[in-house]
Image 1: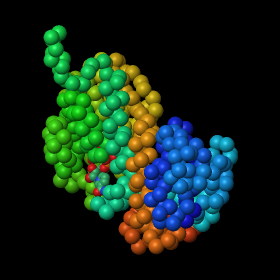
Image 2: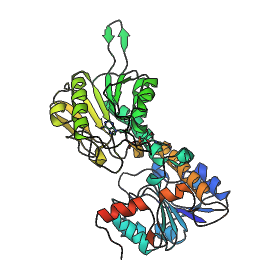
Image 3: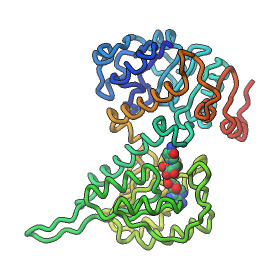
Image 4: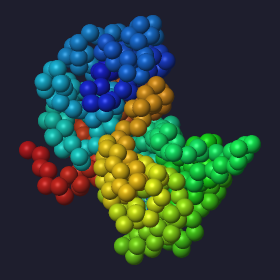
Length: 388
Ligand code: NAD
């Protein structure tokens, strides 16, 4: 296949869908790799490195798209700022797309893909099964977000994280509360512990308790529901009653906490509000909330996505796209996920994914002029999206 990697066009996006070190992994399988000039520069990969690795450098986006049978991207297709058209319209008819897609939030892109008979594979829909772990871009990116969230907090906090015993006195360690101990939360715990902070964490899934403890953090005890987890390993949406109880347990801890890192998400739903405005007032002046759920609506009532606000001395920051702030490693992990997916689904020189594979059943969203993914079809129809 002719595989094309355009330069990302979304504001603030620095990642690239394929790093030079992985070009040979595709060319060895007889694919041709074409990359738009400058596509890797945000992640510190030069055209020379790509050319040396065996990629063809294409100077303009239009010819890159025109000459590709498969497009690899990070961000879902956007409006192309210099070509003044949707990137989805640039993807040749009948070809393939691999990247994040957010199909329910982007029904117009899905409609274009259906009309143009594009086979689209959404990285965020790769099933979270053991066999697909090496393709799990959500986990790769959450690892980076969890790590970076702690560094953001550490650089803003008016205290140091570790315990210091000096001739001038003893400085106690900072106290960090991590809400939600999935991939990002566990990485936040590990990072805060490496910096020497005292860490407490909570998650409604009972399975997480031991993972939290193994990282040296305290698991906050609350009565947990054994059914808190779906078969796919995600948290179920908690009842109003549970959330009230959780807020009360969290509230009791807030006066003694320096930093809250919140990462709580429920797949397909708005993230739960775990910290109300009243609860923020319980925190010490100078303390910080880093809300990793900001983009989806936030775990704190006062969070604004992409903005840092101050409320009675407490800083609430809602960072968006933290992986793009660590672009070299984020691109490295993401590329490896994408390349593993290609090797898994496109074997024996075929240009069509292996639709019998459960991984394809999960992540193929559109094919041959239709939405083929049942979940996405259902969610789009609930939104009233129709296809001519
Ligand atoms: P996520 O980003 O969807 O959610 C983050 C965390 O928020 C989860 O741990 C969830 O339990 C928690 N949460 C939900 N409601 C909450 C509440 N009211 N209070 C506090 N926390 C709350 O999750 P994720 O990190 O993407 O992954 C979730 C789980 O999926 C993993 O921990 C794992 O079990 C599973 N998983 C499996 C694989 C695999 O097998 N390939 C890969 C990744 C993840």
